[in-house]
Length: 257
Image 1 (cartoon, rainbow, N blue to C red):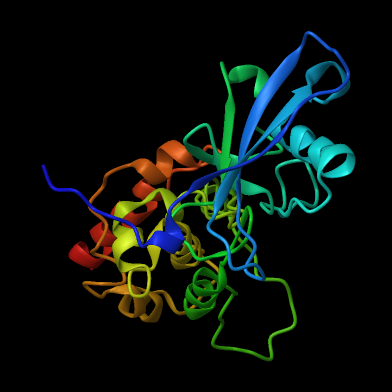
Image 2 (image 1 turned 45 degrees about the horizontal axis):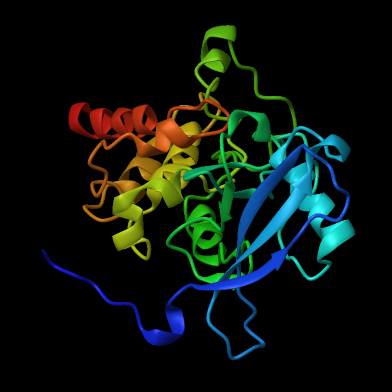
């Protein structure tokens, strides 16, 4: 069997153990990935004993409790706490999700929390999304009309508006893209599920005048056709969207137009 060895400075080590001092019988062990770029140290796994009696129901509540009461150096993104902003995307219990939507009651045993996989880590649970945002910008995610001076509303039928359902709800949390093996290996060229879902959202918008140009822009063996329909993206989307279907629809449009 082939074995792959990590560089010594990349190997995970056991970190600090923070024992509960409350004496509560409702304790949950939480193992969290930690890495500080300002320290010349290996990444580590810190373990926290958390009293669930004094904690909310979501994984984000646990992280907030740890940061507020146990270790203020813990670093992660969060904002709305209602599944709208996508800031708190991370890998919880082996699945990419939003920590504000994931209930810790659904997890048996220890809770294991890591940053989104296969991205550069900025610090602790904060992953570098710069490449994803540049790819998002590349598809020009805004309405493009030939008459730029037109100031009136552009009407849309109910049927055409309904075509955007399941597309516009994407919050660009990157859970889908970072669960995709094709994006892991070709993330610099393959646009990935999140960006292609957004590309399709503008391609099928009846108010947009540049459908052909948009299709031509993504019709590339690396930008689009690195998708192999593994379905990880759809399975991991915390909003219940279907990026794989959107990608397949783009391929069908290119094949039939």
